[in-house]
Amino acid sequence: MTMRDFSTDHSALALNTASLGHNLDGHGAGWSPERVIDACAARGFGSIVFWRREIGSRAVEIGERVRAAGLSVAGLCRTPFLVGAEATDRQAVIDGAKASIDMAAGLGAAVLTIVVGGVHPGTKGTAESLKIVTDRVGEIAPYAAQRNVRLALEPLNPVYAGNRSCLVTLRDALDICDAVGAPSLGVAVDVYHVWWDRGIDVQMQRAGPERIFGYHLCDWLADTTDVLLDRGMMGDGVADLKAIRAGVEGAGYAGPCEVEIFSANNWWKRDPGAVLDVMVERFRTLC
Figure (cartoon, rainbow, N blue to C red):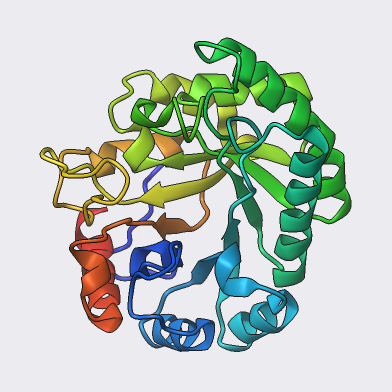
Protein backbone atom coordinates (compact mmCIF):
# COMPACT_ATOMS: atom_id res chain seq x y z
CA MET A 1 0.00 0.00 0.00
CA THR A 2 1.31 3.44 -0.95
CA MET A 3 1.47 5.92 1.92
CA ARG A 4 -0.83 8.89 1.68
CA ASP A 5 0.75 12.13 0.47
CA PHE A 6 0.08 14.96 2.91
CA SER A 7 2.36 17.50 1.21
CA THR A 8 -0.52 18.97 -0.81
CA ASP A 9 -3.55 17.72 1.13
CA HIS A 10 -3.64 17.81 4.92
CA SER A 11 -7.36 17.11 5.34
CA ALA A 12 -6.39 13.96 7.30
CA LEU A 13 -4.94 16.21 10.01
CA ALA A 14 -6.86 16.23 13.29
CA LEU A 15 -6.27 18.41 16.35
CA ASN A 16 -6.42 16.81 19.76
CA THR A 17 -7.19 19.82 21.93
CA ALA A 18 -4.69 18.60 24.54
CA SER A 19 -2.12 20.14 22.19
CA LEU A 20 -3.48 23.52 23.34
CA GLY A 21 -3.50 22.52 27.02
CA HIS A 22 -7.23 21.79 27.15
CA ASN A 23 -6.87 18.47 28.97
CA LEU A 24 -5.77 20.02 32.28
CA ASP A 25 -7.14 22.88 34.37
CA GLY A 26 -5.01 26.01 34.43
CA HIS A 27 -3.10 25.36 31.20
CA GLY A 28 -3.23 26.82 27.71
CA ALA A 29 -4.88 29.99 26.48
CA GLY A 30 -8.38 28.87 27.41
CA TRP A 31 -9.93 29.08 23.95
CA SER A 32 -13.58 28.09 23.75
CA PRO A 33 -14.54 25.05 21.64
CA GLU A 34 -16.04 27.45 19.11
CA ARG A 35 -12.79 29.37 18.71
CA VAL A 36 -10.85 26.12 18.32
CA ILE A 37 -13.31 24.89 15.69
CA ASP A 38 -13.02 28.10 13.68
CA ALA A 39 -9.22 28.13 13.88
CA CYS A 40 -9.00 24.53 12.69
CA ALA A 41 -11.47 25.11 9.86
CA ALA A 42 -9.53 28.17 8.69
CA ARG A 43 -6.33 26.09 8.46
CA GLY A 44 -7.76 23.09 6.63
CA PHE A 45 -7.82 20.58 9.47
CA GLY A 46 -10.23 17.74 8.80
CA SER A 47 -11.31 16.94 12.33
CA ILE A 48 -11.01 17.63 16.05
CA VAL A 49 -10.72 15.46 19.16
CA PHE A 50 -12.04 16.98 22.39
CA TRP A 51 -11.63 16.18 26.08
CA ARG A 52 -14.61 15.54 28.33
CA ARG A 53 -13.79 18.51 30.58
CA GLU A 54 -14.36 20.89 27.63
CA ILE A 55 -17.71 19.44 26.66
CA GLY A 56 -19.74 19.32 29.87
CA SER A 57 -23.43 19.20 28.96
CA ARG A 58 -22.88 20.73 25.50
CA ALA A 59 -22.03 17.56 23.54
CA VAL A 60 -24.81 17.80 20.96
CA GLU A 61 -24.34 21.55 20.44
CA ILE A 62 -20.57 21.31 20.02
CA GLY A 63 -20.81 18.32 17.68
CA GLU A 64 -23.24 20.20 15.47
CA ARG A 65 -20.98 23.26 15.49
CA VAL A 66 -18.02 21.15 14.33
CA ARG A 67 -19.96 19.69 11.42
CA ALA A 68 -21.39 23.09 10.45
CA ALA A 69 -17.77 24.29 10.07
CA GLY A 70 -17.05 21.44 7.66
CA LEU A 71 -15.10 19.33 10.15
CA SER A 72 -15.80 16.05 11.92
CA VAL A 73 -15.35 14.97 15.53
CA ALA A 74 -12.70 12.28 15.23
CA GLY A 75 -12.82 11.31 18.87
CA LEU A 76 -13.34 12.03 22.53
CA CYS A 77 -10.75 11.67 25.31
CA ARG A 78 -11.35 9.64 27.36
CA THR A 79 -13.10 7.17 29.62
CA PRO A 80 -12.32 7.44 33.33
CA PHE A 81 -9.71 4.89 34.41
CA LEU A 82 -11.05 1.32 34.51
CA VAL A 83 -8.49 -0.02 37.00
CA GLY A 84 -6.05 1.36 39.54
CA ALA A 85 -6.33 3.39 42.72
CA GLU A 86 -9.12 5.57 41.32
CA ALA A 87 -11.18 2.61 40.10
CA THR A 88 -11.88 0.31 43.01
CA ASP A 89 -15.70 0.58 42.84
CA ARG A 90 -16.64 -1.56 39.85
CA GLN A 91 -20.16 -0.19 39.42
CA ALA A 92 -18.95 3.41 39.64
CA VAL A 93 -16.35 2.62 36.98
CA ILE A 94 -18.96 1.11 34.67
CA ASP A 95 -21.32 4.04 35.22
CA GLY A 96 -18.55 6.56 34.50
CA ALA A 97 -17.55 4.74 31.34
CA LYS A 98 -21.15 4.66 30.14
CA ALA A 99 -21.49 8.39 30.80
CA SER A 100 -18.43 9.03 28.63
CA ILE A 101 -19.96 6.81 25.91
CA ASP A 102 -23.11 8.94 26.10
CA MET A 103 -21.02 12.10 25.69
CA ALA A 104 -19.24 10.63 22.66
CA ALA A 105 -22.59 9.68 21.14
CA GLY A 106 -23.93 13.19 21.71
CA LEU A 107 -20.89 14.71 20.02
CA GLY A 108 -21.13 12.31 17.11
CA ALA A 109 -17.53 11.32 17.89
CA ALA A 110 -16.15 8.49 15.79
CA VAL A 111 -14.12 7.00 18.66
CA LEU A 112 -13.94 7.11 22.46
CA THR A 113 -10.40 6.52 23.72
CA ILE A 114 -9.78 4.24 26.70
CA VAL A 115 -6.75 4.85 28.91
CA VAL A 116 -7.14 1.96 31.30
CA GLY A 117 -5.46 3.10 34.53
CA GLY A 118 -2.54 1.77 36.53
CA VAL A 119 -1.84 -1.33 38.58
CA HIS A 120 -4.87 -2.27 40.67
CA PRO A 121 -4.59 -1.99 44.46
CA GLY A 122 -3.61 -5.26 46.11
CA THR A 123 -1.88 -6.61 43.00
CA LYS A 124 1.66 -6.55 41.60
CA GLY A 125 2.80 -6.54 38.01
CA THR A 126 0.23 -6.04 35.25
CA ALA A 127 -1.34 -9.47 34.66
CA GLU A 128 -4.14 -9.22 37.24
CA SER A 129 -4.89 -5.63 36.32
CA LEU A 130 -5.24 -6.54 32.65
CA LYS A 131 -7.75 -9.26 33.60
CA ILE A 132 -9.83 -6.61 35.39
CA VAL A 133 -9.56 -4.34 32.33
CA THR A 134 -10.80 -7.16 30.11
CA ASP A 135 -13.77 -7.79 32.38
CA ARG A 136 -14.76 -4.13 32.53
CA VAL A 137 -14.27 -3.47 28.81
CA GLY A 138 -16.42 -6.53 28.13
CA GLU A 139 -19.10 -4.98 30.32
CA ILE A 140 -19.20 -1.63 28.50
CA ALA A 141 -18.62 -2.79 24.91
CA PRO A 142 -22.26 -3.79 24.23
CA TYR A 143 -23.47 -0.41 25.51
CA ALA A 144 -20.98 1.39 23.25
CA ALA A 145 -22.20 -0.62 20.27
CA GLN A 146 -25.79 0.24 21.15
CA ARG A 147 -24.85 3.96 21.16
CA ASN A 148 -22.88 3.57 17.90
CA VAL A 149 -19.58 4.52 19.57
CA ARG A 150 -16.33 2.71 18.85
CA LEU A 151 -13.95 2.14 21.77
CA ALA A 152 -10.18 2.40 21.23
CA LEU A 153 -7.84 0.86 23.78
CA GLU A 154 -4.71 2.99 23.86
CA PRO A 155 -1.58 1.29 25.19
CA LEU A 156 0.69 3.79 26.91
CA ASN A 157 4.47 3.99 27.13
CA PRO A 158 5.78 1.62 29.83
CA VAL A 159 6.83 4.58 32.00
CA TYR A 160 3.13 4.93 32.88
CA ALA A 161 2.48 1.29 33.80
CA GLY A 162 2.28 1.92 37.54
CA ASN A 163 -0.19 4.76 37.75
CA ARG A 164 -1.79 5.51 34.36
CA SER A 165 -1.85 2.42 32.18
CA CYS A 166 -1.06 -1.17 33.00
CA LEU A 167 -1.68 -1.66 29.27
CA VAL A 168 1.67 -0.85 27.61
CA THR A 169 1.85 -2.87 24.39
CA LEU A 170 -0.24 -3.15 21.27
CA ARG A 171 0.00 -6.91 21.73
CA ASP A 172 -1.79 -6.82 25.09
CA ALA A 173 -4.40 -4.40 23.73
CA LEU A 174 -5.18 -6.77 20.87
CA ASP A 175 -5.30 -9.71 23.29
CA ILE A 176 -8.07 -7.84 25.14
CA CYS A 177 -9.85 -7.21 21.83
CA ASP A 178 -9.65 -10.93 21.08
CA ALA A 179 -10.96 -11.85 24.52
CA VAL A 180 -13.89 -9.41 24.39
CA GLY A 181 -14.70 -10.11 20.75
CA ALA A 182 -16.73 -6.94 20.10
CA PRO A 183 -16.60 -5.36 16.61
CA SER A 184 -16.88 -1.95 18.27
CA LEU A 185 -13.60 -2.48 20.18
CA GLY A 186 -10.22 -1.67 18.67
CA VAL A 187 -6.96 0.13 19.37
CA ALA A 188 -5.34 3.53 19.02
CA VAL A 189 -1.67 3.73 17.99
CA ASP A 190 0.10 6.72 19.53
CA VAL A 191 3.65 7.54 18.44
CA TYR A 192 4.57 8.68 21.96
CA HIS A 193 3.69 5.31 23.41
CA VAL A 194 4.86 2.85 20.75
CA TRP A 195 7.86 4.49 19.03
CA TRP A 196 10.31 2.29 20.95
CA ASP A 197 8.57 -1.04 20.24
CA ARG A 198 10.21 -2.95 17.39
CA GLY A 199 7.34 -5.46 17.43
CA ILE A 200 4.58 -3.03 16.50
CA ASP A 201 4.53 -3.75 12.76
CA VAL A 202 3.60 -7.36 13.44
CA GLN A 203 0.88 -6.26 15.85
CA MET A 204 -0.47 -3.61 13.46
CA GLN A 205 -0.77 -6.25 10.75
CA ARG A 206 -2.57 -8.44 13.29
CA ALA A 207 -4.96 -5.59 14.03
CA GLY A 208 -5.69 -4.65 10.45
CA PRO A 209 -8.10 -1.94 9.34
CA GLU A 210 -10.93 -3.51 11.34
CA ARG A 211 -9.27 -2.78 14.69
CA ILE A 212 -6.98 0.23 14.25
CA PHE A 213 -9.33 3.06 15.20
CA GLY A 214 -6.85 5.90 15.64
CA TYR A 215 -3.33 7.14 14.94
CA HIS A 216 -1.83 9.82 17.21
CA LEU A 217 1.10 12.06 16.33
CA CYS A 218 3.76 13.86 18.40
CA ASP A 219 7.42 13.06 19.11
CA TRP A 220 9.56 11.70 21.93
CA LEU A 221 12.19 14.21 23.04
CA ALA A 222 15.51 12.48 23.68
CA ASP A 223 16.05 14.54 26.82
CA THR A 224 12.50 14.87 28.03
CA THR A 225 12.10 16.83 31.24
CA ASP A 226 8.72 15.34 32.17
CA VAL A 227 7.42 12.05 30.81
CA LEU A 228 3.82 13.29 30.93
CA LEU A 229 3.98 16.98 30.07
CA ASP A 230 7.02 17.36 27.79
CA ARG A 231 6.06 15.76 24.50
CA GLY A 232 7.70 16.99 21.33
CA MET A 233 6.20 18.51 18.23
CA MET A 234 6.66 16.21 15.24
CA GLY A 235 10.26 16.38 14.07
CA ASP A 236 11.74 17.60 17.36
CA GLY A 237 12.46 14.15 18.78
CA VAL A 238 13.72 10.65 18.03
CA ALA A 239 10.60 8.78 16.82
CA ASP A 240 10.69 7.50 13.23
CA LEU A 241 7.40 9.08 12.19
CA LYS A 242 7.44 7.96 8.56
CA ALA A 243 8.19 4.36 9.51
CA ILE A 244 5.39 4.22 12.08
CA ARG A 245 2.86 5.68 9.65
CA ALA A 246 4.04 3.25 6.97
CA GLY A 247 3.24 0.46 9.41
CA VAL A 248 -0.15 1.87 10.35
CA GLU A 249 -1.20 2.51 6.76
CA GLY A 250 0.35 -0.76 5.61
CA ALA A 251 -2.06 -2.44 8.02
CA GLY A 252 -4.94 -0.69 6.26
CA TYR A 253 -5.56 2.41 8.38
CA ALA A 254 -6.73 5.39 6.34
CA GLY A 255 -8.31 7.61 9.00
CA PRO A 256 -7.36 10.86 10.72
CA CYS A 257 -3.86 11.57 12.04
CA GLU A 258 -4.40 13.20 15.41
CA VAL A 259 -1.79 15.55 16.85
CA GLU A 260 -1.70 15.18 20.64
CA ILE A 261 1.08 17.08 22.39
CA PHE A 262 1.19 17.53 26.18
CA SER A 263 3.70 20.36 26.60
CA ALA A 264 3.22 22.45 29.73
CA ASN A 265 6.42 24.48 29.43
CA ASN A 266 6.64 24.92 25.67
CA TRP A 267 3.75 24.55 23.24
CA TRP A 268 1.00 25.25 25.78
CA LYS A 269 2.61 28.62 26.51
CA ARG A 270 2.53 29.73 22.87
CA ASP A 271 -0.23 31.43 20.92
CA PRO A 272 -2.64 28.64 19.90
CA GLY A 273 -2.91 29.96 16.35
CA ALA A 274 0.85 29.78 15.93
CA VAL A 275 0.88 26.24 17.35
CA LEU A 276 -1.75 25.16 14.81
CA ASP A 277 0.30 26.71 12.00
CA VAL A 278 3.41 24.76 13.06
CA MET A 279 1.35 21.55 13.20
CA VAL A 280 0.17 22.01 9.62
CA GLU A 281 3.70 22.69 8.37
CA ARG A 282 5.26 19.74 10.21
CA PHE A 283 2.44 17.42 9.19
CA ARG A 284 2.83 18.28 5.50
CA THR A 285 6.61 17.92 5.52
CA LEU A 286 7.66 15.41 8.19
CA CYS A 287 4.84 13.00 9.01
